Structure formats: structure tokens, C-alpha cells
Image (tube, rainbow, N blue to C red; front, side):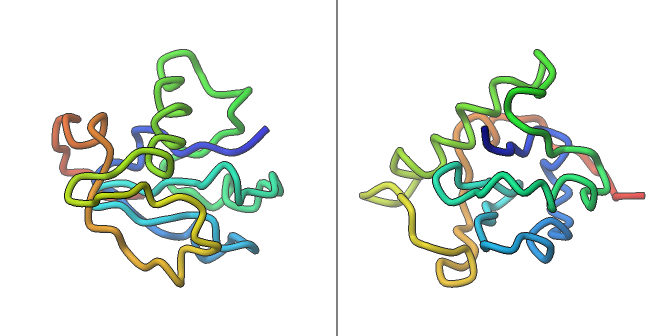
Amino acid sequence: MTFVIADPCIDVNDKSCMEECPVDCIYEGDRKLYINPDECIDCGACEPVCPVQAITADRRTPPERRPHIADNRRFFTEPLPGRAEPLGTPGGASEAGPTGVDTQLVTDWPHTDVTPA
């Protein structure tokens, strides 16, 4: 099991989850955050602090958000736009820094003007 960030995060990027993550496994795309499934220790610290309830354990992800399970993995295993190699498992989001790009699923997602409550 790992945790996954789904579409409510798109265009919000609150980053509260990044501050709570004890292993620094939440990476910043351009419009969304992504949890590295190989670095996540399944502690769940990120889930309750998300202001838009975008984070769930992969096995509890609602059917309409399940495409984000594979999409979160793709962020790390496939080359992102403008990159020759996949991001992989860099060992921490702080070290990697913001990527400035997203997966195709997120890039194609309609833009929203959402402010967290």
C-alpha cells in the first residue's frame, strides 16, 4: 500500500502534506503534487492535513480517482516533458526541488480556479 494524490490537488498545490511527510517523498509538479510510491512508508501523515482531501491510501481510492494511482507512479517511472530520463527515486523531494512539469493526465486536466478552504 502507498498513498496517492488525486485530482482535487490540481491547481491547488497547498503543500501542507509536504511539510508533514517524515520521509520527504512528496514531489512538486507544475499543477499537482505526487507521492513517490517507492519512497512512501505508508505512515499516512499527509492524508489528514490535505485541505482538499486529495490524498488517500491507494486501496481506498474511489473508482473515479483510480487513474491517479498509475499516474502518480508514471511521474517517477516515465520521462516527464523536457526530460530525457525518468525522475526515478531521487531519495527526497527537497533534494530534487520542483520539477515544473506534470504527467499527461494532469497537463490535459481542465484548469480550475480553486482556493483551499
